[in-house]
Structures are given as structure tokens and as C-alpha cells.
Image 1: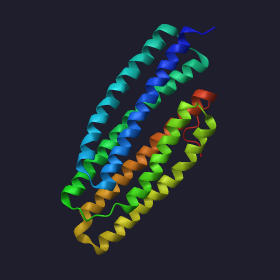
Image 2: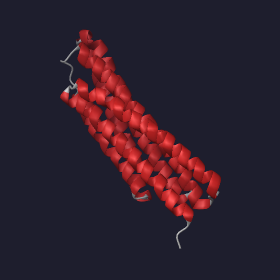
Image 3: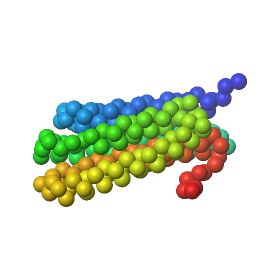
Image 4: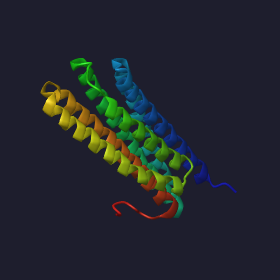
Length: 217
């Protein structure tokens, strides 16, 4: 026999999946802006971010309603708490995409000669990590979530490479310092997207097992 709360939890999951899809769309759009050097792509990110923000409020309100009216316990409560935290991470991921759009626009308005090669390599890995984190939530798979956690080291390595290469280039191309600093900022925003993906994976594991694995070595 289906409980009333089951359909409500499914609605919460569907809204969160929808929000995740919007985050993936924002990320792909801003990365298209970088790879194609297309200012219009950067502008489109702001519209997508608004839909992400609207969904954040909708999900928060829906979670509060279930908590107030159903009094969930055990696994149901863990699932709702995880949704609330994932909701926050997804909203911040939207912010990260907007940050990259602003920085990318500044770089292209300043010069069209800067190379985004290292950024594109890092971005491809980040995109894979974001998708994997969202897939782990869709399928509620702790195995998939644990795979996401392993990807974080590679994101850090790629970010460090962008920073190291940019600093080296500053020494021989001082006229490009401003652009190279912006590349570092883009890399840091991509790193944060990876961090939020890690948070989502950790929340999936918490929802399924009740184990809080944050800050573990």
C-alpha cells in the first residue's frame, strides 16, 4: 500500500532532478561560450540561472510542507534533509556558471587571443563529474556516489595545472597578466563546481546509509 508521503517524496525528487538538469544546461551553455568564444552564450546563462533560483525556492517550500504535515522519520527524513542540502548546492552551482560567464565575457571583450585549452580540458572533466553526481542521485546509488568522490582529486590536479601554467606564462607574457588571472578565476569556479558535486554525492550516501562521510580522510 502506497503511503501519502511516498508520492510527495517522488515529487521532491523530480523537482530536484529538474533543477539538476537546469544546472547541467547552464554549465554546458557557459562552456559553449568559452569554446566558441560566443558572448551570446554567456548572456543566456543568466536566464537559466533564474529558472534555477525559482526551483530552489519551490523545492525549499515543498520540503518544509512535507516536514510540517507528514512528520517524516528515519530514511524519509534523511532523504528530505539531503534534498534540502542538494538544493543549496545546485543553486550555488548555478552561481558558479554565472561567475564563469562574467569572467569569460570580460576576457573576450579584452582580447580574443587568449588560449582556453587548459580550461577546456578541466571543464570536460568537471562536466563529467557533475553528471555523475546527478546520476547518483537519480538512481540513488551509493556506488555511483562513491565514484564521484574519487573524481575530486583529478579536478584539483587540473586546477593546479591551470594555475601553474598561467603563472609561467605571466613571466614571458606580462601583457597578458589580466587575462591569465581571469583564467585562474575560471579554474577556481570550475573547482567549486566539482566541490558541490562532491557534496551531492555525500548527501546521496547519507540519504541511503545514514552515514555522514564529510571531512573524512
